[in-house]
Length: 446
Image (cartoon, rainbow, N blue to C red):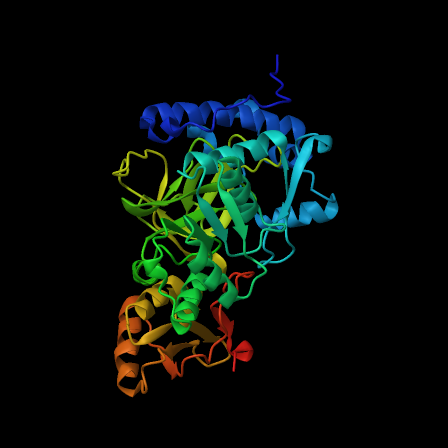
């Protein structure tokens, strides 16, 4: 008799002990939740039933983690096409639409934004996960620099912190100087924003005579884009804000998944919520721990829009260490997110990630925070030009050019051209947008 699952069990998420489960117990937990999720998705979501049937696969074939490789991948492009064909939320919606309580969308930087909805159950798990990783409580002040409207991460963070008793300051609509002055007056417990914008505010504050590092902010959270886990960038952020800078990580399509800790630069992934894989983006085969590849997640708790083996396009490496010094035993992405498959640049047979170039630029104290990577694919051989800015107190970058070019060539194994520009030449980071560093030559900023 075939087992039919039309509802998922209630799971405990707000329990810090889950993050320190012995590895064998964690595998048992993941296997059990995977079996239930596969049956649920097959029964409730036509999208997944079609994919399983096309692969000649039944839920009975998935007994645990050892069978994960048999499940077909899914991609953002598939989900975009499914939502277009089955509006408004796609045929991978598995829960009753009458029970939906939150609507968000992806940022839209890679095509049609995905509509992500949450049941009350799922949204509660989102808040539980955020609260279990945060010491925020009554009397604390949280300043959110970016927009909250329609975005899952900021919206969830604000609600989780408010639920814990903190005072929330929504500063997304203020201009940069107003934000800096407000932070100086309020002296908040936490400030959260994108890495590039956090760096930008350091310059704004310095020009206004404000020393952010003297404000005794407990934690700065970098969200929405890679950067804070790059050691040289992290050093600049830490020096400018004078406090621990935590790299927060999540996907709207899934959940807020985790972040860094003071003991490690690796991203700690909530492994009771998702199963993490890293694969070769070309062959789709798994890569060993420590090797770079595309991160793939399987949602094992969410009842609203379940995703199995979702290809994120994020490039990272699974840590080979069994546990973090903080005691965390789940999956960890060593060195955090190194880039995206979409941002990877092929130059004369070598793949180059923007994060590798950023690490070099941040290592030169003479250079400001903004930079731009210009790709000219029309040249006989693909050419790469890096545009950087001098800090305001650096009058001339002539002697800097060769040193930076050599350092970049050593890091990425490709020679590049370098333009050293006066401070303020390149577009500045904005609080409401992810910073895009790579441009085609025809789109280069003036």
